[in-house]
Image (cartoon, rainbow, N blue to C red; front, top):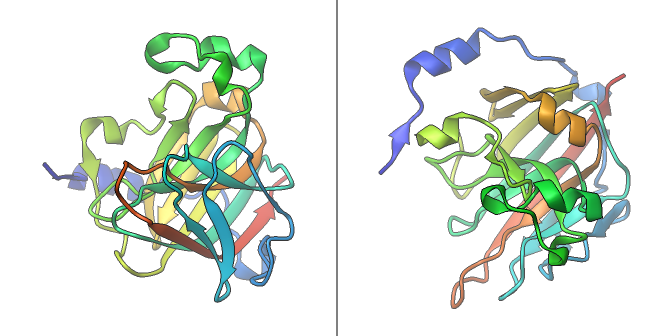
Length: 234
């Protein structure tokens, strides 16, 4: 059942000021619109990424786990903006401050409070800003492979919104400064999260474009990103 974001919560969020406001002239492209220079595959999944008509196109591959195209550079505090369009049958997201798991991460990042297994070594984990068709939970923050599930509290209550335009381009803005992460979808504030625990483990890391795994006998589905730009904050 679809449960929509309550007016009370929306009003409360509207009163919160952004951490940082960057003008367009301050943002630097991290995708040149022609090549994948400056990006690399995470090596864990097998989805395909190509440049198509000035955008990065991610295409699902059967039986593949979640796949990520990562920036070669790591980022800590920043303002990130991009546009995204996703197939209605595909869940996606953008990782921020994320990194591959090492041995010491396994003890605390399994499901249901259990340790992760050695097969999770190298798996990307960290905060993910959700992308999905609306009404839905686009813009909320998920703890990809962290064992914590949603970092944003609202999705656990079933909250959804209709800010995302289906079958069209959508503008995202992410502001990460210290433990605070704000997300905006088409100019609407969705998440304003302060999480010291995730900041302690992930103060900086890669930006990653996700192609989610899909069920058998479905797809292929695709997701597109364009106009990816960033400003690093002190």
